[in-house]
Image 1 (cartoon, protein in one colour):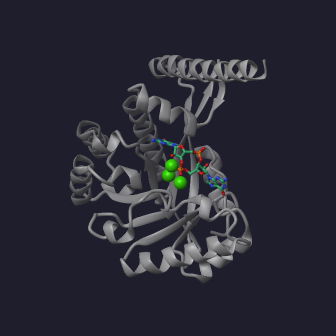
Image 2 (cartoon, rainbow, N blue to C red):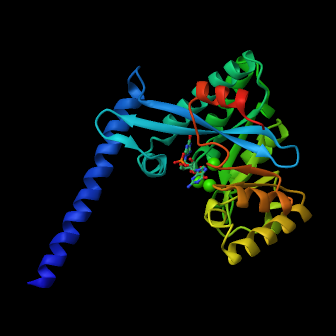
Length: 277
Ligand code: C2E
Ligand code: CA
Ligand code: CA
Ligand code: CA
C-alpha cells in the first residue's frame, strides 16, 4: 500500500542515518589514534572595521576522511560529543592551533587566534588546565588565544561552566559568545559574565543587504551590546553592501567569505601579505 511504502522509506532513512553516525564514530576513533591525521586546521580572518585591520583569526577544524570523504564539522562535532570523543578532538585542535600560533609569531604576525570550544569542553577543568599549560610551554600568553563558546553553554544550570570561565578570565583568557541570537540568553545576562565579545549569528547577516527584519535585529543588537560594553563581531559577511552597512552602524568586527574563506595557514599568510586590511 501507499502508507506501507512510506513507512519503509522512513525506516530506510533512519537506518541510513544510524549507519552514517556509526561510520563517523568508527572512522573518527581511527583517525584520532593514527599518526597521520586526517584532521587539519583552517583559519578565517576577522577584520576590525574602524581600523580596517585584521585583528584575529578563527581556527576551524577540517576532516578529510579517506573512507568518508570530507565530513563537515557541524556534522561530526555533535556526534563526537554524544560519543564521548569531543575531548580528544579538542585536544587535537588545541595542540595544532597552539603550534600554528607559535609559527605565526616566529614569522612576525601577532594577531590573536580564536578557538571553538564545545559545551563539554567548557565543563572540563582538566582539559582547560592542559590548554593553559600548553600555552605556557609554548611561550604564549592566555591573551594570544580567544575562546568561542555558545549561548547554550551558559544558560540555566551551567554553574561549572561559569566557574571555569571566571577562572580562565582571571588568568587572562578572553571569551566570545558564538551564534548570538539563536539561543535564549539575553545581553542583560551576559553583562554579569566575564564575556567581552558577542558574535552575531550568520543567519542574521547573510541576507542583511536586502532583509529589513535582519537589519532591524542587527542594529538593535549592536546598540544594546555597546550599552553593555560588549564588542560585536558579525559573521557570514558575503558582500560589500553588508560590510558597508555594518561599518556604518558601528559594528566592531566583521568576518565572512567576502573578506576571506577559511584557509590553511600558509595560504592565510600569503593572503595577509596582499590584502589591504
Ligand atoms: P561557527 O563556530 O559558528 O563557525 C562559523 C562557520 O561559518 C564556519 O563553518 C565558517 O566556515 C562559516 N562561514 C564563515 N564565513 C561565512 C560566510 O561568509 N558565509 C557562510 N555561509 N558561512 C561562513 P565551518 O567551518 O563549517 O564550521 C561549522 C561549525 O562547526 C562551527 O560554527 C563550529 O560550531 C563547529 N566547529 C568548527 N571547527 C571547530 C573546532 O575546532 N572545534 C569545535 N568544538 N567546533 C568547531
Ligand atoms: Ca565560532
Ligand atoms: Ca556561528
Ligand atoms: Ca557554532
